[in-house]
Length: 260
Image (cartoon, rainbow, N blue to C red; front, side, top):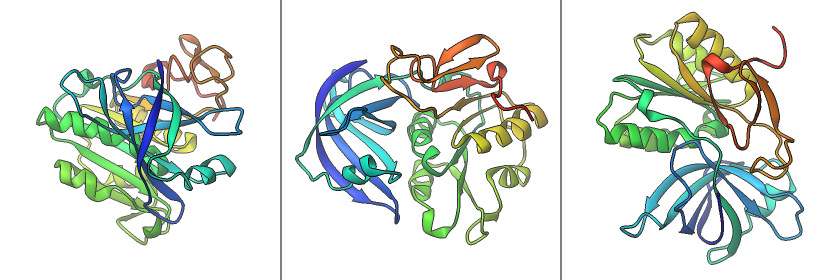
C-alpha cells in the first residue's frame, strides 16, 4: 500500500450511470490485476474503494503511470466523483488488496464479469493476452443501455460473449446462461461481480463443470487496508479481511455466508 496524490486527466461518462476516470501519478504499489485503490473525497469521512481497471506505465522503472478506474454512481460520494474535472488532485491509497494470480490460467482461461465487476477483469485479460493465451470473457449487464467495454475486450483479441437480463443484446439471461452455450473446456476462470452472480458462477462453473477459479468479492469497508476488521468474512481457512486478504478468493476456500 502507498498513499500518494494523483491527478485526474480524464473523467467521462460511459453509460447513464457508469463513468471512467484516469489518474496519473505513482502507481508502483500495484502488482496484480484485481487490486483496488481508495480515494479520499473532500468532506467525506470514509474513502471510496474502486477496482483497478487498467494500468499503463509512463517511465521505465514502473513507478509513474496512468491508471484507469470505472465507477458506478450509487450515492452522494460517487455522484461527487462525476464532477471532478481534469487537473483535480486526489489523495489516494494505491496497491490495496490481493489480486488475481495469473500463473494458474492455463492455456484457455475464462473471465466472467457482471456490471461494475467487469472493469477489474480488463487488466487481467490484457496481461493474459500478452502471453498469447486464448481468452474468453463473458460480460453480464441488465440491458443494452448498460453495456460498456465489450469492444475494448475484443480489441485485446478476446472472444467476448454478452449476456443481458432483458435479452436486448447477446444471450438472454445471466452469465451462467451464456456459459452453458460455450464449450466448457476451460483451464481456469476469473470472476468479479455482485455476490448473487458469484454464487451462481460458483455452482455452475466450479461445482457443475469442475473448473477451478478465483473470485473477487465486494464487502463494505472502513479503512481499506486491514486495520478495522470491518470487512471480515468466514472462509474454509478461517476469517479473512476482504480488503487485505482479498478481494480475490480461490473457489476451494469459499464458504458462503448465506446457506442455500
